[in-house]
Length: 493
Image (cartoon, rainbow, N blue to C red; front, side, top):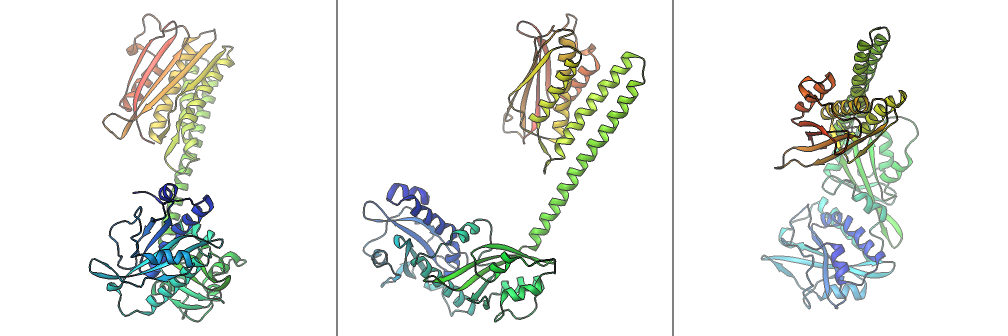
């Protein structure tokens, strides 16, 4: 089905500002459909001299008229000539004939869409008369408000740019709760849901007849200066969206000022109790903060362990024992680095490229301190990994780079290259395939190299790769040096 943008681009000569005005209208017209209990269709004049439906919306508060979408259809002339009449005369027109749909009578009205004094489109309202009954106070208020908004459209005073933008951010809808205000901000009508929202905020009195801004002063706790923006919204003076927090409850409120020929005559205020939603959000924030704090404390504890091991290594006279403890310090620091990165995030995933680059740099820096000029580089991307996978992979990478630096170059310089490729797992599995190659141009593997009899670092790598359901192989480079190829399975990030 074509979109508003598609229909306008293919069928009309409307300019960009006019198209943007129509987008603003469509972004906010669910409000009018719900207040009208009617289907709305937006008709644009085509370059062929016909009318084409660019958008269609159904009410959520009542029975609609059309089960099929009207978008892309041409207007049925001459039966719907009242649309052309509304366009030519720049006024609202009601069809002189009754439209019948599925044996139900339908009332049709056309409203010219005016921008900067020009009619650029026509909005039609289709009301299912078979679903109408004796109107209640709520329905009378809704219809009167819808008529006021229709007049604003015909006068070029709706959509209101700020109001439409707020309508796209989950602001309350008609079914949530409606307050009708007069020009002074006094309540002339409050729907049952709106009354309930006020009660949850702590106001138990009658709403109708009182100025909402004054009532709000009693609802809110004394926490300092009054929020002027909040007061403007609840008085219906600005088309904006805000939240009212009494401490016990939170209510979302959106104001739509009603204007007649430039003069504000009242407002409609949509309200919704979002207390439970905010409570859940606070719980999630607390949980996130707790997780970050845990990662931070784990990092601190690991750094303490590394410091103790480092002190112990300095007290040893045996070079082999000292080297073993220094290796342990390096491994603990690698795990601490993962937790340090996780402590800065809101979730349990980490961008592993940063950790990999730091791990390579640390090994290169250590080698260069001893006088060996070594450089390192990383190509490809690891992407995001879970905390568990990141810790394991960080250990694997650190060991492989450290081995390349320590055993591959001896007293001469060289280069370590880490290449990584990550692809979705075959068969649509939940874990991705990640292939990592660590290459150096050093001395290469000794002739008698066997994994089974290799050092502790190699054994650690073998064990960690197994944990990630992977495989690893050591081989000679194309000309010189060593190539270690590791394939593991990691969770999608």
